[in-house]
Image (cartoon, rainbow, N blue to C red):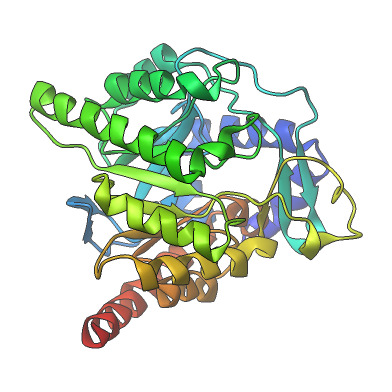
Length: 352
């Protein structure tokens, strides 16, 4: 029996954002108690090296669930192999007006238009430093909504500079649909200029801090094959160490006619599973052999996690699946990947 099945009806009776805050309040109070093991199961120890970092297992938390790094130790107790927080922007911002998260239960999906709501760099850095968390930590960075694209590089540089000393890796988010014009930064010339500028800044920071922090780019599932190819060619050229495929989608084809399908924002969950797999496969076919890919989008079962690896990902992240399946999904996926990913690695090596 999945203990989460007892709790989910109560949570789903509440507004989605209220349920989110209530869940974290309960988790923060109980993460050190035996009931967490009952709810989440035993953590899976499947060490793997990724981006030069030692992960506890291949299942990570995607950015967006803990935007401000306020719940790191509680999330670690659920058994994640690595955790990504954010998106963080230089200045605090409230995001878009509520309501801004909408469930589509029949399709195991969410629509959110949060809009990079976060406490800003100062608060997030303080939260991380006080957390006591010692695992692999990704910090997802973006620009403030009021910053025009022509000056976006300034916001990303400030974020990178400030979090470099505390992050295991830094994710450059240019793919959220909820900040006006942000996705235009995925375009050829704009993306090239942004990545070149950040790579230059990263080299300076490497000298300052005595360590080289990997940089990762997170892209949308709504790109066509030509756009994916251009991005894939630009990643190694600009020294970007990995890619996350993918963020949420603006498409509603897969949920047409469902309650809340007409809400604006990014769609996540089961409906984007194959969309993200398509992007992963296209990236794997175009990128140099062995280039690191983090697969995310629509993982609601161990089989889904394995399918991401089969598509070409090296590790996976999840978010919406946990809301529908509960914390046991983390361990279920990590256990499945412990054997499956090694087999896939051997097959990829043989194919190469």
